[in-house]
Length: 452
Image (tube, rainbow, N blue to C red):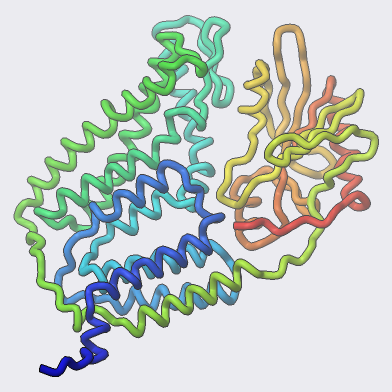
């Protein structure tokens, strides 16, 4: 019997080709987004949960909007050379691949990766600081029933001479992404029995947000009542226990109750996936090529040197610290210039950094010096009294608004630094601020546009 080669169509429908295309998407994403992604625990957890939350596709699989959206975003990213747009293009392309190659759909994989992304970190950073201030105020009011002298100063709570902070680096509001990832995971598991309407999905996510704030308030109260400082091993343990007890467990029972309430909703059935109908090989190859071209355009984009915050100050001794932080000292003042990684990154906030040196903030306020808005405050440690001010600066523009400088970096303006000046008196502080701002016209150096 003569053996003949299988037709090309049979080769294209082989089981190995979906795997090859899937690996192609993963390789493109890794090559061109490896520096953009944070590769922290939320992102790794989100990637690990994606296969567990992808639901079986229900025919007909409407994949054209996803393909067109991914292609349009990839083309726009190639034209603008904006990495954030490219990230969304890869995200939609991966979602489309799940539809057409794996026969899976549902909003949950997309929600997972959005929550674990740098964009979510940016949004959490922008909004969490005002929330921390409100939480500390609420905690101080509740603690007045136990302690007669309780003071809330910004994100600091002072109780009988001891200081407690609502620190974003500890197991508090930084657990927001973990709680939302777990919420999406539980919703996806329950959706295998009953589909969730859009209002139920949104309501459950809002429920988890509220539970997260509640568990953080309880965490602050427990840390203060039991005198658990930030260096104590139980500091993180208390945060994790509060997350489980006051957020995850209530959400589990709440989502189960809603699932029973919606038990009459149509159930998802596992359909038979027909490869020759759902797998569009040529379109996948086209989209991979488009993503590659867009990624190369972004990777090798020409950076036009632009003036940024001066990295040398006349009359000051310069020192470069880790993370490219520049420190300038003389007999009258201390200046820090602290770069930020991108529009989504957290800055080295003075309220946190000075606390690590044992200082307490007093009289924090918004002021105006040389027609610029700055934050000002007094640093207190024992008998020491220092006056400090800070703002965000890129050498061309100064601001104290989080949304302002982040939006400008998002658009591709020169990278911002956090400028923090400290002096022994308020008069000397204002004089140093005026001198530094006046030096921008003559002491500037080329700076790379923010890489985001």
